[in-house]
Length: 193
Image (cartoon, rainbow, N blue to C red; front, side, top):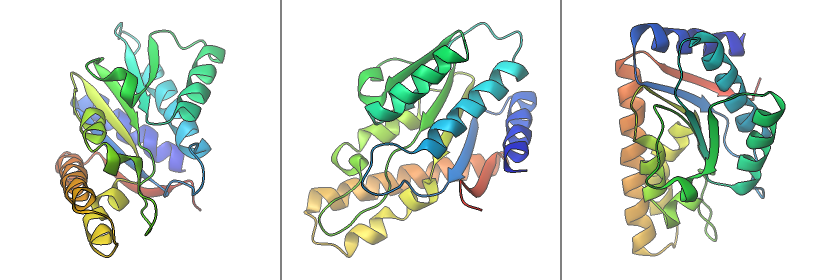
């Protein structure tokens, strides 16, 4: 049923020529740079797009912040023979773009000692959240990212981390707001039953 909901939202976006779909997933697992749920979800989205956009001849870009996820997705893309799909880490795609972009988000949590990758490199979420010609699909716990400023305020992290969290929170809230505006915001904890 959850996959059908995703298909329905992508169909709404494709038919309505809406440029943004946000699929809110469960939070990223701790102590790893790989989330199989998000990686598989990106592949499902790719398959739905390939089936729904039969006449589309352009590239589809998939980005993720971690090499482990990029390697897994790229391997599966090769096995499924999905042509016209480019898979990169967010770092390596800076400056690059494609008409359709699937942005698989990274960790969104913070503790007293450690913080999400995005707090060290806040522009990476902007890279993943921008550059849309036709469609952007965001896969990750965007709600949790939007709450980062409040969580960081309760920690002993330096001021630059708090400023980064504020910027990240604003970007995440803007993505949610845009998707809600077009009714293409799928709020489900995908990956948790």
